[in-house]
Image: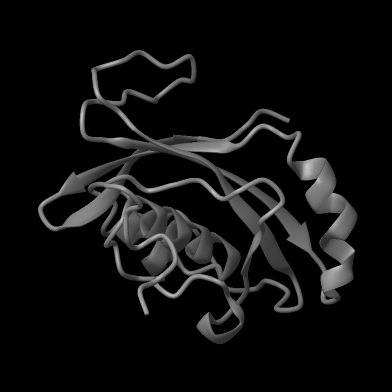
Length: 163
């Protein structure tokens, strides 16, 4: 079975349907993604970045960023392992022409994917996220520009919403 988000649908990777949420925890066994650490698609790359953030693992985060190897994005591993994230890919679209984007640092080129991710922090009980998921769908996403470089996908730029 292919990893969720690892195979394109009709030649393109797709966003999650409304109301569908994925889970990112401190380990692969309890996370939805089956491709963390494998930069085989735009969605797997964005999920690997999220895993690096949630798990406070600089190695995962840095591997996703174009020319990110050796950089420090996450300083420590002191987080609460009872905290996990619900997330959904709210948009995934192929860029077909060079375009300007209203967000800073976002410069998509033909062949790139723009992937929007909405995430919310949840507590140890999965029910903690139910209402938050309903509210989060109205929140601005984090927008990622993902580009294929060689055989891997890398995040060229990203922009988090201003809260």
